Amino acid sequence: MSGKPDEMKYFEKLNIGTASIGRIKSLIKSNIKNTFNCWEKGFDVPKQTFHIIGPAGVGKTEICFQIAEELTNELNKEFNTILIKCPVISRDDVLAPCPDLRDNIPKFKMLYSDFIPLDKNSYGIFIVDEFGRGDHNLQQLMWQIQNEYKIHQVDLPKGWFVVSLDNPDDQEYSMDIMQDAAGLRRTLHIYSEVSVPDFLNYAIYKKFHATVIEFIQTHPEHLYDFTSQKMGSVYSNPASWERVSNILHGFDMNGGVINHILDIDTLISGLINSNMTRLFIDFIKDKKEIRPRDIFNNYSRVQKEIEKYKIDNDNVRLSKTMTSFMTFLVTSRPEYDDQNVKNISQFLIDLPHDVSAMFLTTIDKYKRDSKEFSYARKLQKEMLKIDEYKMKFYEEMKSLGERAAATK
Image (cartoon, rainbow, N blue to C red; front, side, top):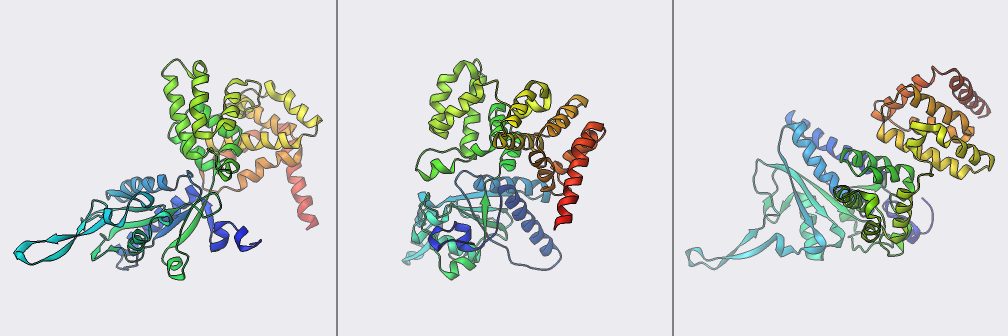
């Protein structure tokens, strides 16, 4: 942790952990399943409320719906969702006093809206979205839900779990979050990082337009445009790329993307801004740019360009090319034949050692039981059957590693 308090990132101010949105989803889902397991074994542990903080458009709300859907299948219990959007509703939208004129005795009872789950046998995720931007009265009500799992005098059904969401109060956001000690202790806070692999895994699963997937695989740095966001401009983010994908799918049904470039240019600039749109359109048109699939399918076509980068000592371009290739490899996990294996091995042989080492360091970041690690390990075994690869890359990397270890 460094810098003055007002220069710190939000997660630094709170001194909390960070994780990718996919990891957060896994942690919350596991916690809910563990809670049910405890209940079934007679240990009545209290439920945990999670507070997810992260950049707008990163997928915080989406994972709550995914958790409910997956728990429905995995626990054989129908999980519903209720979403409270705090900036656009008030306390009275959730509950309000209602006159009760029965027996001619003036009194009031509370009228509960559809926002409140009342079926005691139901299950679900209660999502408090942008909690910090709700007015004070609504925040008080949401605090009760998060802390006590009840609203006014009505307890939420035992099978309902609460997740609150917020954008960080960095300068690019407007946020009025309660910072008192009581507020901080009531929930488990976790900060969501922007994760290119998580986005691409989701995009591939949801069948995003191939051009969007390939663009982010080739240019992962363009997934989230923090610079434009801080300037107050329209900015690219995972949610906006999904909308771009939908627009492209629509034009595919009406003559194809390339025949509607001008319309696409105008439309998507309102989602990802004009500068990013220009880069995206150039990507669609430019067949000379080195793309991950070029390396995988036809490396000889781009090999001279790689050699040129080496001659020019352009390690920036080489590193970007390697990063995009590894992003493509571990997210798409394409089927490969002998020629694909030769293409990849030759690509790694041709790169400077400090760049090609990214192949191993990237793989090493994944859990040993993950799909990504398993795919890369099988691919590595196939490449080791190639003598040149084994001698010029694998053995060389092994030797470099041993020398580095000896100097420590």
